[in-house]
Amino acid sequence: MLARLLTRAIDAQAVWTRPWGDLVHRFLFWLFQKLPGVRDLLIGRWLGHPLHPVLTDVPIGVLFLVIVFDVLGNVGAATVALAFGILAMVGAAAAGLADYADTDGKARERATLHGTLMVVTLLLYLVSLAIRLASGSVASSGAIALSIVAFLLLSAAAYVGGDVVYVLGNMVSRHAWRGAGMRWIELVPAELEPNGTIPEGRPVKAKLGINQLVLVRQGERILALHDTCAHAGGPLSEGPLVEGTIECPWHASRYELEHGHVVRGPSVYDQPAYDVRPRQGGGWEARRQPA
Ligand code: FES
View (spheres, rainbow, N blue to C red):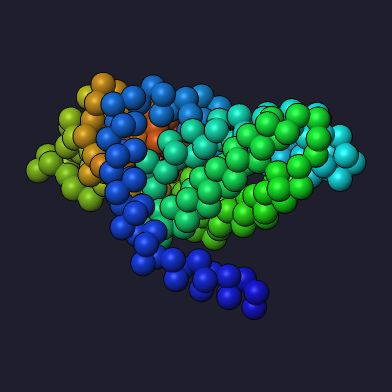
């Protein structure tokens, strides 16, 4: 009940989060396209896990400590914690902005609300820090009140950010619930050459039970990945082949054809890869490679 009310309130912000988000997104998309190495570092491709949720715990914990130190009357410790919390917020924000650059639709609207609330929070914390530094060892009630209001806003922003992941599945692997399965299953390519072979040098769709794969034939070898991009579900079979990888047509993640390893973001997850072999009696069969 409460969640439904909050969701309605969040989605009512679309009148401004949509246009504002589109504008900010255009700039960030342009920026991170120019800096793919920085983008991959910030999203956490090197970690195989989104970096933003790892970093956000630090400022939330440290900024809560500011309230604890204020209550205990330890002005110096509160000021140090606040300065550290602000720095941690900036680091977490950088990772969040890299995620945001490849976020679409409703997830982008809610991420825009999340980010805007975080910016307001950061400004309140900066004002609080400035007042504390100006007032020295004397506790300023204005600075303390600002920190408390900022922490409430921070919690609200974190709630919206959680929605982006847990409700809308942004940055969640599209294959999170797909089991490995060790059985060989008949593989049915969507197209064949007149001589019965799989076309070479371009991606070809295929059915493997309920799964859709993308095949790339290299001579006698047939390389196969799941067709649904792990990042946000783009159709890999519609993307180009680039130096032993296939590039997603939606946000340009690249996966190595042999084992599905992600070699360029925004995906941070490997793509399920499949072994393919000739089937007795003709045709092909495939099974998923172990993770
Ligand atoms: S859906 Fe985003 S890179 Fe494929």
